[in-house]
Structure formats: C-alpha cells, structure tokens
Length: 215
Image (cartoon, rainbow, N blue to C red):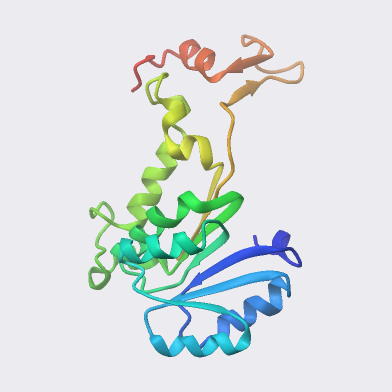
C-alpha cells in the first residue's frame, strides 16, 4: 500500500507518536527524502525533534488545532491516524485533513474496531456517530454517480475524489484521486449485446430505470 512512496519526496503525517518508535520505522521505510511529521497530545513527544522529525503537540479532536496545523502544513501525501481512537478524534481528524490530502494520496485509520467500543464512543453496528459508520456512508457517496440526483452527483465529495476504500480488520485506507464521471465499456463478442460499446453513467442509469432525481 505504501511501497510506491518509498524513496520519494513526500509529506507523511502520523498521529500518535508515543515513544517515537514508529516514526523511526517510517524513516527507515520511506527513506531520507520523506518529510515526516508527528502529532501527539503529550508534550514529551517533542523529544523526537532531536531525530529530525517535526512534532506538533495538540488534541486531534480539536478542530481549532487542525486549523493552526493546516496554516503551516497546507498539503499532505499520506495521513496515518494511530491516535486516541475515539470517535470524535477519528471523525474530526478526517474532516479536517482529508481536504488537504494530495491527489494520489492516502488517508489511513488504524484500530477501527473501536467503532464498536462504548468506551470510545462506539457501539453495536448502526450506532450513530462512529468512524465505521462514516466509512459506510463514504462507500455510498463514492457510488453517488449511480443513485444521487443526476445534477448533484458531481458535487458529492467522495464521488469525485475517492476511487477506492480498502477495509481490513481494524484498518481502513482511503485513496484520494480526482475522478472523472464513470463510463461503462463493453468489450468482446459474447456479452453485453444489448448495450452500446460505451455508455456514460447517465445513459446507464436511464437504461436501467434509475430516476434522474435519484433513488
């Protein structure tokens, strides 16, 4: 997932520094050209600046902190959220930082099982306000071309900027890449005989009786 970034200049942000071991690992893995930034609520983490890392001290659940951060760091290639794992922290962090993730970048959230832990603001599947609930909403939004009102689909953030969401046990990786409206292509002599060689999403929806005003 991160191998294409090895040896390249990039801005990498890890939320959750603790003792700094993972920052050292990322330096070793990504190489000397990577700009590696750490965020933690513990002021003791500033000690990692001695090893060449940029360290910000603040609460990832505080939107005002991220506004200050973004004023100094306006673009990031990879975000790794391994912070406090509460619902507020994960949701506030995504809403604040995903807009500044670069085209082709990644937003990764670890320990997503806390969406099911009441201690972290989670609960049973369907519990409101969880990170995994947000992910499920993003999956629907990513497919807005096929179900949203036709004149609104290209205004849905995930539809135009998220081509893939990869879900593992306790980890979610969201790719950010500018997308064009989808086109369905038919190839080969044996299938899709009733469809033209190419259909845009509007023609596809109408052919399959999806209302223009959405479903």
